Image 1 (cartoon, rainbow, N blue to C red):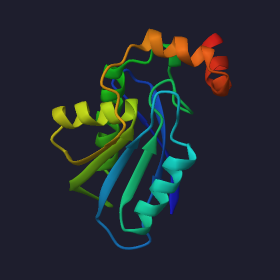
Image 2 (tube, helix red, strand yellow; image 1 turned 180 degrees about the vertical axis):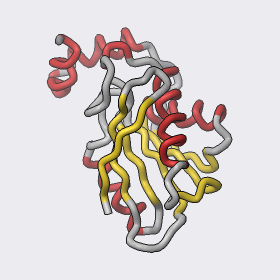
Image 3 (cartoon, rainbow, N blue to C red; image 1 turned 120 degrees about the vertical axis):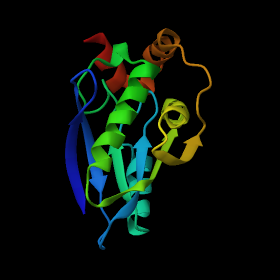
Image 4 (tube, rainbow, N blue to C red; image 1 turned 135 degrees about the vertical axis):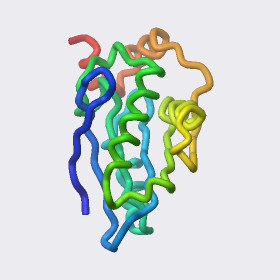
Length: 163
């Protein structure tokens, strides 16, 4: 089963997510998926991973960080600290679900989402497992925006930045 969900971060902004729930009885281990800098919860890779994990008995939450996808906030104000806060609130949200085994929560992310997961796991002991794919080790948002604006394949991101 797939269900659209919404929850708030510490700044009161609404974050959009999608829950993938196995077709069995819970509670289930859970994975929170974190997207990269110019991506969203709806990237084909994230959707496919969520589907495969749900088939194997995991609840999966894929969500948009502040200023990305369907979540509130401004993309150009994106900061690593804000993403770590968003991850914490995603875990708060998912942990409240009766289908979730609160002792078996993992986080997975790529690029900036991977860095977010690493730092988030170091601060939040509820994260018991971690998979970071090509995490960034240094993040300068001004430089990243500069490269995105120059990169024609990110036209939807560039249009959002220019608004």
